Amino acid sequence: MPTYVYECHDCFEQFEVSHGMTETWPHCEWCKSEKIDRKPLFFTNLSKTKLKKNRVGDLTKDFIDTSKEALRDYKKDLEGER
Image 1 (cartoon, rainbow, N blue to C red):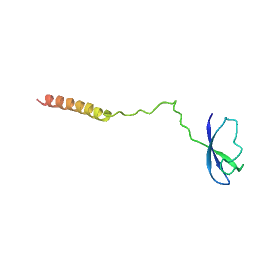
Image 2: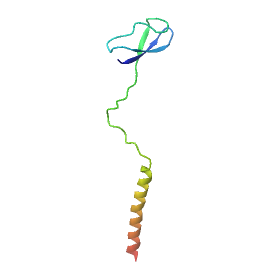
Image 3: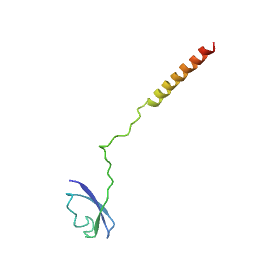
Image 4: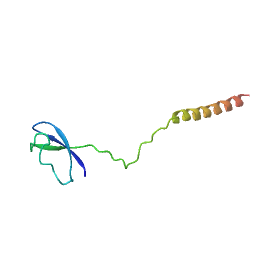
């Protein structure tokens, strides 16, 4: 069953209640007032594509690969000047 958060208009307390989607809670858990509203909750959809997480060393590996390419280009330029 889903958990819902309610807020009371009399005592301003919040409380969580588990019940079905079509049900509502009748009263405040703290003061028993019937003046309560269900608060909206934020959900994240974990089924969508996940962000790429960089592993430790990915940045270093990229730097080494870029440096190797730059060194190869530099060597070619030096050989062409001879």
